[in-house]
Image 1 (cartoon, helix red, strand yellow):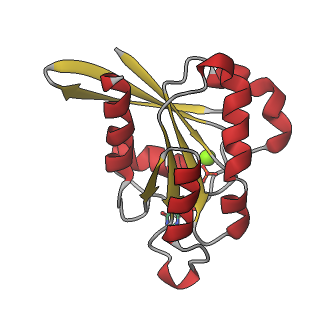
Image 2 (spheres, helix red, strand yellow; image 1 turned 120 degrees about the vertical axis):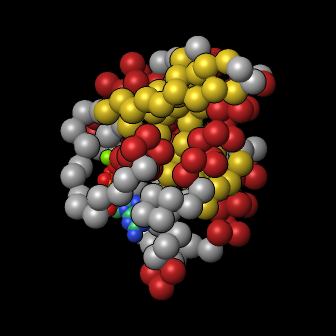
Image 3 (cartoon, protein in one colour; image 1 turned 45 degrees about the vertical axis):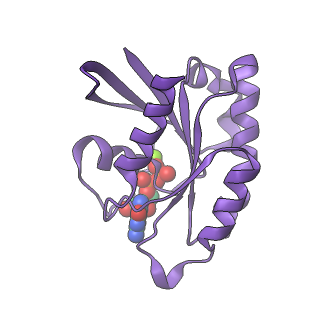
Length: 168
Ligand code: GDP
Ligand code: MG
């Protein structure tokens, strides 16, 4: 069974880094903005059943919003990522929920997670995790602090969502 998971959020919040960490367990400090979209996949076995988790790493460009429908089609879970060191990326999370809803139409009710990435940037942290938790609650989703740099939370949040998908 394939499990399609979309990773969304503003530019440079760490979407591609989260995918790289999950699939290859690596991290690159160099910034290479995503052109188009990338697919990352990883096989997992749960209760003796093999699943292929396919992460869809989307572009951050707002202006390309109209052509995104194909990327969202059939999404079974979603990570909505913000960067704890940039307040705007947090403020845009409701817009990303809205975009998800618009593109998924009647199938919009999928397991989601609000992901607070770059937790390692302790001194530059602008958004308290309690705020992220509150926002997640408002959308009836889970909240997860992560760092693609250290690996904190990355595997856990994806497996948590996948488990929700499987048990649905
Ligand atoms: P994307 O545009 O959302 O795909 O973001 P990228 O994954 O390309 O990351 C943007 C920049 O943030 C890169 O320079 C990454 O190295 C950096 N970055 C991503 N995740 C983290 C993290 O958890 N901690 C820190 N300190 N930097 C990160
Ligand atoms: Mg990217």
